[in-house]
View 1 (cartoon, helix red, strand yellow):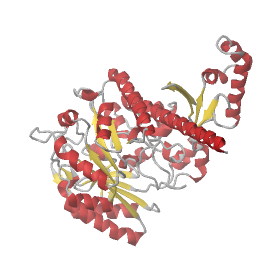
View 2 (spheres, each protein chain N blue to C red):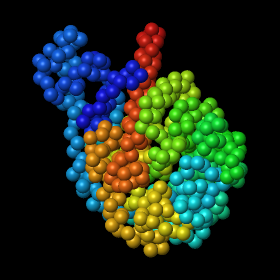
View 3 (cartoon, rainbow over the protein chains, first blue to last red):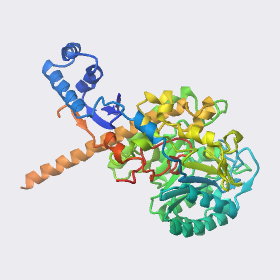
View 4 (cartoon, rainbow over the protein chains, first blue to last red):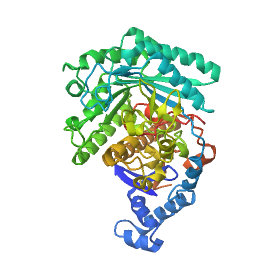
Length: 467
Length: 46
């Protein structure tokens, strides 16, 4: 499968099954769609009005070379491999601990319904948290790296338990030859020096929730009595990011139908000094006034394009920043198994409620249909576990022929369920945005590779002049 | 090549034999919590 597109002056060709990416001129861009179905002579005749014959022949030979080197039109040879792969024993390696089903903000788009997840307000006790960590260690098989996210509601409403659980985890990891990677997702309201210091010692990553510009943030992220949260959290987040050397954190926002010009929010966060930024589309019922609609897509695509161009500019000026959804690791990214096996929800990754109930992920919490078991008795609903285990790219019709399948792993099961009542479908607006982001991310790589090449040429020329 | 520049990428076919160790980060533990993004995850089995 080949996906080709034009973006910001680049002609980009992605060979989906090998992951190879080619930047081509107009001629080869026109040869490629004809290559598999036309003879050489037919291609020459069809393109002869636009290009000289010798050039077409040259381009044709280059395409042929790429095919021979298995960098173009490669086959999808992974389906059988994935059949075998999903037969492997199930282990649990990551937990989302709902340390507090309560929140000191009342964000309008919160899927947790202001932290309460369709249930009552509650905080997790140390005992339940401890049982969750014991469950994780016991179910992790030979996996060494175990991930625990302190999530909510707002986890800092129950910070003492967070501290005690981290101490317990550090004690247990030595006994069981494991490595806990703790993370914290917070709205920042209760952040203080003590918490920052603790997080800098113990948290592999922190996610700091803020939507961007003051008016955008305060509209969707107010306190329960209506006041905005921006003025309180921004200085704390700035201090926190600096204290972590601008690494191992994300300021993370949500954009909605109310701020379709979200690139301004991303740039606002960059202008505040943040270097690790994630601003993501809201997922909401289509009936909500702030939900993204299909007709918003052209505007959102323009925003991603605008952001990508601005990021290249800033990178060249040495004031670049990372945007989570444009980050793509072309040389060291994950293996095919990881890319095709989905997010791990319901199998490797589970969410734990304050009462110790297990759900496939944080987004399913509160939906009794998806109750899987609890931390003391383990996973009881094996049928549900199996359903999630089989949920990979090849189980989803929409994903099979999508060029993005190696980058999104089939998308979010919860979004699929929310929109289609099935975990093997896909949330269509989310897919369109995901595809656009991948195109932009690859274009940025192409632009920066070109920049690096030009710099290299200039250096070489200077070297030649001095010799 | 005159008409094509190929970016350096990991050859996905080569990851079949050694892949699947499962030590890399779970996608939703990174930042997202609402989408699934694996293309930016790093391999821990280099």
